[in-house]
Amino acid sequence: MKLNRILLSLYLLIWIFLSIDPWYREDWLLENLLVFIALPILIWSDRRFGFSNTSVWMLFIFFVLHGIGAHYTYSEMPWFSTITEFFGFERNHYDRLIHFLYGFLLFLPFYEFFITFQKSKRTTLLFTFLFLVASSGVYEVIEWIATEMTHAQLGMAFLGTQGDEWDAQKDMSCGHLGSLLGLLFWYRKKHL
Image 1: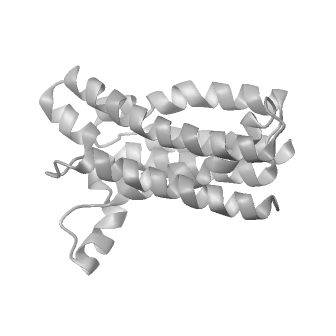
Image 2: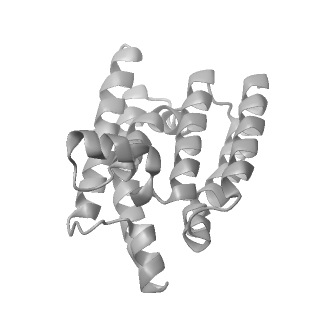
């Protein structure tokens, strides 16, 4: 519990720092809807069921990386520009990394949450995988709807397609791959 409070406090400090002068304020607000919705649910879940230290670290890493992406926008993440130039990529792939990490890093926290309702480890592992795959697709639809409801310039910053008409499908594929690797990793760890 102490680690949870320490990491939550550290995350809130980082979040406040990243909220200062983001590159696109409206985009930052849209990106942080995830935080505004998820953080209270996570705090409630932790108090009620308790996450392992590993899950708490995974949540912390994911939310910090998400906060950094929201500050700069995923498509303009300057720390990834060097990687983009080094490999000769046509686009900044920070958003794809975060979609992958959504599936991989959040697998264990969701598993620990779902296992409180269903005691079968195998069923819960499968359900966690399917939940992450489905939520990855639902997020892309929500992202598209949010873009349709905003002006075009903000929409492009939020969607971060960077001229790739298959961006949503590739983002979902990254999330699915992360979820699959999470499933395989935790299946072996749970010795099923």
